[in-house]
Length: 324
Ligand code: ATP
Image 1: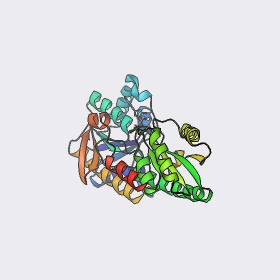
Image 2 (image 1 turned 90 degrees about the horizontal axis):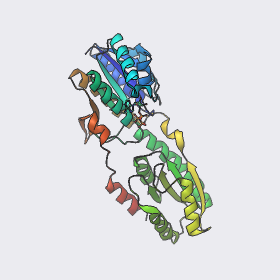
Image 3 (image 1 turned 120 degrees about the vertical axis):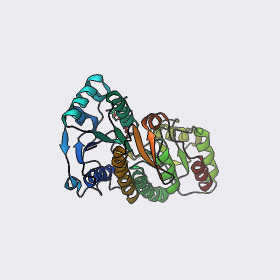
Image 4 (image 1 turned 30 degrees about the horizontal axis):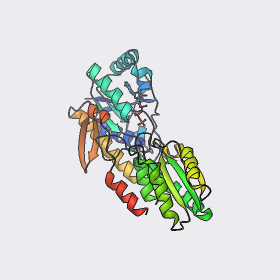
């Protein structure tokens, strides 16, 4: 194992740079040669590959985004695209690959690695925290802190005007951002894709707390919530309660992906970056490296992509109790 390629793929996440840095520096530490592949699998197909050294990753640990760029590559899903990628891997004499991304990235890595019998280790980098095999993914902590900061600000204006805010946060399939930020920002209700707790629960909650004369109400809604969009929710609350509440909608959007990675994300990314290269050196392949219960775990891509991490019912219970 002498020459290792590293790429970032799928949605970008704060902390990806710290992971790239760790991969590159670990290669240098072990006298191996790191190669940066630009724009995810697209760069593998287009041979957009560059030799790196310890200096190539200086001053990036604190930066959001990814210096290698990220992309969604439909071509990599085709036989022809994979074949081209394989030719470029051979041309650059790469012996292994580290891919940083989410579910889709690992599915691609699994197909490619098995087809060409090529060693690949994955690092979970996605703000959604929706990967089985690790307690946290790189980017989640930063994203959730960005949300909390924004919601705190919304609370100031909500309180000043006695308003009810519906705040949409990212999470098409997973409600981790919604649940963590909802608890941390003291929201009244949290609506997530995993649990269809029904609109009635929201109505009950509003009816119950209206007796308490609350000056502001914040409802955090993951974008994949089954009750419809935040605008649908606003309409349904208006139908149910008439003009009892002055409602507003905020969609936080892509601000959640950006910003300087938190300390937690930088440390996680650094750990996983080192472990991915060490894993390849030990002969690991077709696996994602993660941290569970404070221990290093390598999870087969097959399992990491097929299983979904379970939403923590205990957190939902706590959210319900403290929002009473
Ligand atoms: P995020 O969770 O942030 O969306 P992701 O890794 O799941 O990240 P995707 O866009 O789903 O993001 O996947 C990233 C890339 O992985 C795709 O653009 C494609 O190049 C590759 N990929 C996904 N599925 C496959 C597949 N079945 N076969 C080959 N490549 C795939």
